[in-house]
Image (tube, rainbow, N blue to C red; front, side):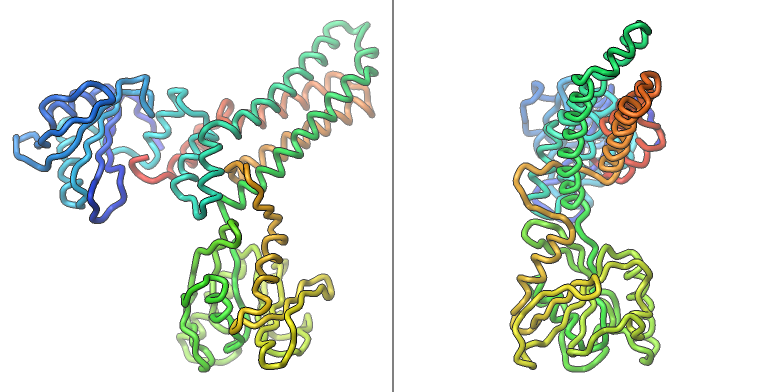
Length: 449
């Protein structure tokens, strides 16, 4: 994303389609002037008023509400104007074209939020929480994103940064007085501070793991032989008839994707074609796609409808990608008079259930939550994979700093590790971030946000 900070940008801020209201948003130095050209006059800031909307030729386009916010007291920190018209694609496109006629530029994806970040209205973690809130797949995910947007996650990161800076101050002060350095490095108080800081890292990492799960969810693929009950299992987990179920083997030919929630944990679940060595051209293509999906799965549910042990050298196992985490689901216990059960065999979880009656489905749900490490505790914070990676990197650097203190009594090396940890933490909030990373982050946002 190339930033042109002097441009006035415009974008439709509501989803495409037909609705009662559609919103056109403008931001920049000429936003007020462009708004006046479209509406005639603008009301007082932060006050809505009814206006007719016209294009550059004076033709009526729509009528609705207009409001504006004077910078820096706005979302972007710049002058912002919003036109609330009727929510139709033609109407919204006409309003956008009118703004462009008067000198605005079509906003890039995420450019409004990027300007808010660059104008110090949000830090980078808060900016990313905006997108997470919009894209949240569950009520818990939305609450977590809102907490991060309100600054709770950033405050915790800043607390860690403060602890690192405090330690750096002590270490570097000791280095300025060499005759005192040995006494400093032997001070138990310093070691206690390091240990306390490491505990803070662990607590925030655990919360960030939950945040990543809430944001990304688990990518779960259902695989197995034809007619083993894969589609029935999908329907039972989803809670509705998402897939067609018949007694005919090979009913599922293509991938069927559903987004579900398991006690607050988002799960992106994929039902696949039954894997077998024969079939028509369409079924073979479905099997190829199933194998490709398994390569990117977090976990697979390998469904069988028999009591036979699935040996590691079985033809079905041979089709699974190396390193894939698998849970074996023994389906159709209702036909064999078995009870629902869960067990571990050869380091692998096996669950006995009935996708038809639902017996044992709760065992599977609980297993998936535990396998992902999802606690579902209130107060979670929205986080992304890059946040967790940065936390782990900084945690490791502070741990190395402790080793330099306890093993080597090397103040300079300890100070260098602490400096690196501070930089890693600053990458989370954007105080130290490359332009390439900023472009990648904001380009993933929707247009108009």
